[in-house]
Image (cartoon, rainbow, N blue to C red):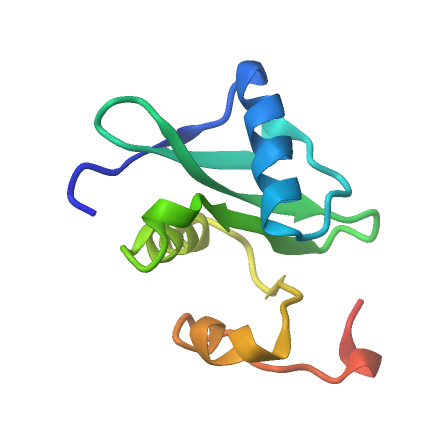
Amino acid sequence: MSDLILRLAVETDASKIRDLIHRVGINPLDLDWRHFVVAENAEDRFIGCAQLKPHRDGSLELASLAVEDEYRRQGVARVLIEHLLVNSPRPLYLMCRPVLVPFYEKFSFRVCRPDTLP
């Protein structure tokens, strides 16, 4: 998408983030807007989001990646992931459905055994 705009979330995005996460059916826990990046189209319409979710042990998780239905398969998720990867510390973890593993492998994520996770 050439007219995609990324920005850090602001407090007024909290309900949009929560609503989208619920609509796409992913984990609705720890949706702190301060950890999110949001994607908008040229008309300032909220079309997607993702976060770097901190955990108590200091690890970070790429989480809550969601894109509105009509904007899927247009590169929005890719742009959000690439943006978050630029300055994120390593290692960076994520949890996903098995069917999504090939998508995340494109970004150098790899499957880990549960006993190797923090």
